[in-house]
Image 1 (cartoon, helix red, strand yellow):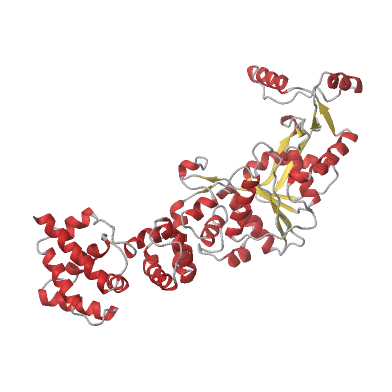
Image 2: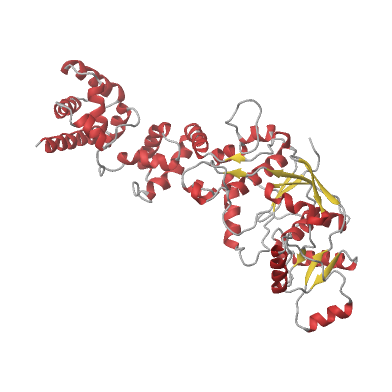
Length: 491
């Protein structure tokens, strides 16, 4: 076990928390908890045009819903705050001026138009577009002249002209970057706002981050960040770049592949423990063949040695299967409370739930959840328990209502049930078995049309459990309705 581990998840609040970000947060959380270290949340909100406080709140809410608690960060504070980059601008300014004073950074007065023109010229000449360093050696007089023209400078980091920077990646091994391909990048924009590569390094130093676990797309940023650490004479953290998450067709995961944000999965009725379990399997392999893992088991087993280099493939079917497992295993009261908003959304139950209604909902949820995979599917499967306003499945009608004698079978079933004094599971099942023998048909020839009559569907939970839950009066009413429906189709 490593000592004094400090990791961070540092999202940009420009939208919802997507599964890639959630996976990064989870792996950082698991790494910290496995090594009994600290998990820090920092909001990297220096993109002033796109960052919003609403997005920051959404991300924080999504992390809470997932159950990924943090030791330092928004709402909980900590010794190295503030934890919003927009509140740390003086730190970046101070560090930039330290680099300027040592000749490791310089002011650049090139305008965006000039840079764009040079970029186009480079591309036309078949060269890779990169900053040509023309402001690297400006004299004080040249700088004063440019400032008098009204030019507002940026601050660029001075990349060593020769050499190689090696990223010692804990997942990928050593990855080398020649300095020839790294141009002098901007660290402070003309409006005084730091760039990502600069701000995250300064914050990671100040917050004493020991390990940086992040998406593979950041690997190309890492040599620049290492050079900043070295220029500031600070020890390097360990880096680990997590594999990409691709769509089933191996394209970049996007909206066209369905839900991609934590909020969308929550709103579709996925459970947080199922989503975490699935995300853990996107790029990490637990011991053996086990795929269902509790959070505590993930913490026990987690190691970067078992994180893959190759891309993980997103599979909604697997996530849904895992969710079905957790939905069936979870405490019934909890599932009931989670299902109620989905029932309310379909206007099946009122906003105010009485104790009696709650008990009924709980019985319904307990009955239908074994056949469904999400809370949305729970509500859909439960509809006919709360409303008589349903139609009959057309294929079911052809198969069970249009058979000769269908109406007579349902009439016999109705009369049989009307005679029952006790309408419990044992009595109802016994009555149907005896009726089957009395009228000389297989039990299924009574069960299937009855199911269609009571629910409008050909599939569902156990028929006798369904009948008892609906109650004698409702069951008989629906049988009568089905008999009338069959008669009207025959005439």
